[in-house]
Length: 157
Image (cartoon, rainbow, N blue to C red; front, side, top):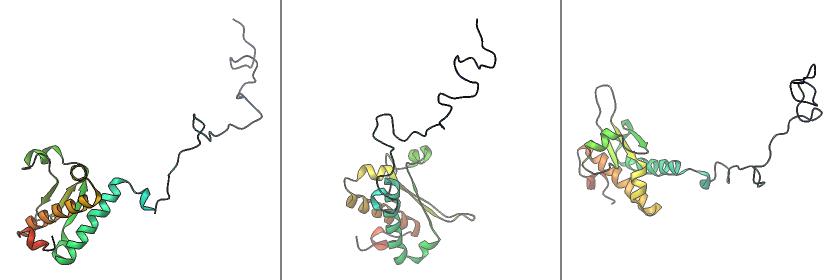
């Protein structure tokens, strides 16, 4: 086997040099199909740039705000959105898949109302229907928490 002194094993190149020693390495500016770098389609503040989860959170927040104006005691309640119910929650629910859940207050924790985003989105065919469904589930959970009828909690329905 033949070897040149001072060579790193690649014939014809100086040690430590890349393919083009006089040029710095180039950054890749285009994807492999030549269409350019991919990036956001719209800037962050534009509504089109929001993810489905962020849109759902906004929708749920609007409904919670509406209910909190009518029932100030809801200020102490925590509201949360999860993608899907946990496995143990699903087994305890009356429905095949839970859409929401109310966790009563304990001596150390405040009450919490949880909405499950994916099951709610799958049941709604439009944004308006999703808004109504989210509000209905929140009203049911608040009614359960307060020990009232849903019609009492939100008579506007």
